[in-house]
Length: 169
Image 1 (cartoon, rainbow, N blue to C red):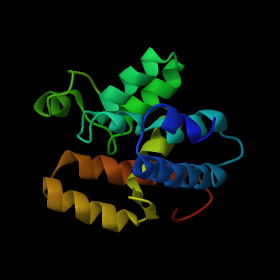
Image 2: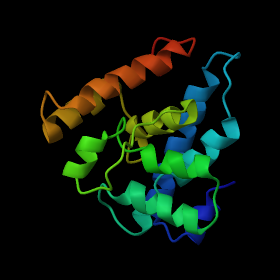
Image 3: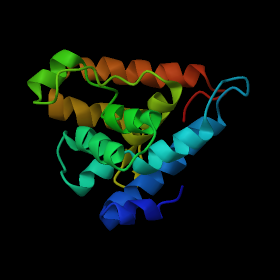
């Protein structure tokens, strides 16, 4: 799968450039993982390319749900659909989803591939790589210092580092 699929799905050049940056970051994280891990690299690639396809129709938080629907309508595999649906932040709980006007369900990444794509997206601001500290400061300004997403973000970062042979991404 290549980035041209995003043009076919009517994504803007900005979304395509952002998705390319997320793809590179996801591949970087994957390349640092333990060789014994059961990681589907093709799934990571496809998920990273398609994670923001919903932005072809909406720029809001609903883009993950809309993107999952678009991929379902186009016959994409369930695993790719799940990456798209769960990539927002470090995941959203069912309770938070209801408060945000999303369908009532958990949007928490569970598979390793879902976690890698979600976190790669967190570490890309536009098209540039940013640090975890940058993301934390940005989220604190937006959601407050005690929002549960911050704890999930830190835990996701530490979990992925635990699978890798590096101290930072």
